[in-house]
Image 1: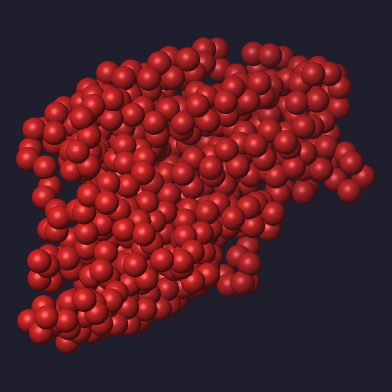
Image 2: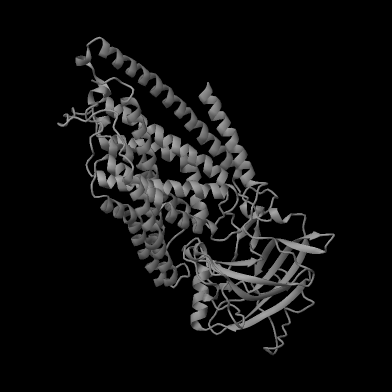
Length: 632
């Protein structure tokens, strides 16, 4: 009953954490700005993005209106890796002063610029803008037909008609919501919306310094669909215009991101997570009961046998006590992967803690990616320590070689895949390509900080006395009897990965949607609960299968324990294939290669994380049971 009470307390605490992290408790990462009436507001432009190609482009890749001097805003490492390029634009407002219609500029489309516009309209590219660190949102009807507001991120470059004509969205109707402080007469921006439309503007003569357009002046308020649309054709003149309306709002500054974070299917999210939690909780209870009862009976029987001089007839896991701690094949490689898994676990845990406290909110653009990269680098200390402790237990002598493998194997493979993918993005002239300077910074973080930290960790770990085995290992290895088909390594490893994957696959859907369908992911409370469920499930399924393996007198458990939990990564990759064909509309070959390249990296990381959890659970379990029985 005590265990159940503990589980119930944990569930309540997790729900409280979840509630606070998704509603009231919000640490935005940027300080609020107060604006007085008439203060100048500068709209910044971000990348052009498409869920069809997954290749972001710089805003000025298309022939939009350009300011006299284009300036890049300060970027962090995470923004560069995400392909964000935040620049100034020609769109300027005066705080709380409406503009009915303003001309931004006129552009003549050449054959090449018209072709670029048509391609981007075809691929359903969206323009992302930012005002006071708020991304622009486009209002839309909810799928369930409810009147509650729903938004899309960014507006479409244009639309394609049924008769294959392309029309550009050259007029933008901005709506800026502000929350007024009645005492100070200051206001804070709490909403930024746009309704795009295509308008073929009419004018008699063009004066660049003082443009006069009949369809756009101080007295006209343009309604969408009220004018003929502007077609994209070679040598066409396109006039870009905009209007802005300021509206007071009851929304407080701390809650201004809520509209971006609300999901259409939040009910499904809640029920799915609770359902997943209850199933895994039930399975965990069953597993724990079976293990505790069976094990206590086994240990009692074995200790009784010793007193009755019937040790000759003993069967089951005690028989292999002289071989269970025998050094496995490729023990050095196992040390490397366990060390890397500890590094990954540390990074995931600390990142999630920061996210739960609100430090990695979406308003802190690129914060999540920056935190993950830096934490990975600093967790190298723990990777070296864990790897060398295990290496010394296996009586390894060349600790420096083991340390080098730990520092280079996983990051080297990931960096090689990343480099190839980056080269493909460069070939497409996308802003998602990581610049040479950033690539150099990543290599410096790896070689200059991570590798030395792995060496420091290894040195500290190797200095400590080796982990002592609870039983002695025989000099001659025992012959393993022929195993039943269901105890064959391949079968039991593949079976072992199903339960951990089943615990996370619902949350995986939301994470994939946020990455590939340009949604914000900020439900770290859910994610933390799922992470804990994953830990418990990986540990328990590995312990159960390890127990069955030892009972059938097969003592080669080291690698089997790692691969049993790690095999869930195979199901993750297969699910990503299913997701690609059912949810995404990617048609370009390069975009498909990018998707599967990045999902390979994610699956590999998941393999290392879950494998290490399974290994340590089994390692603890085997040491525990063999130290509990009397052995001559």
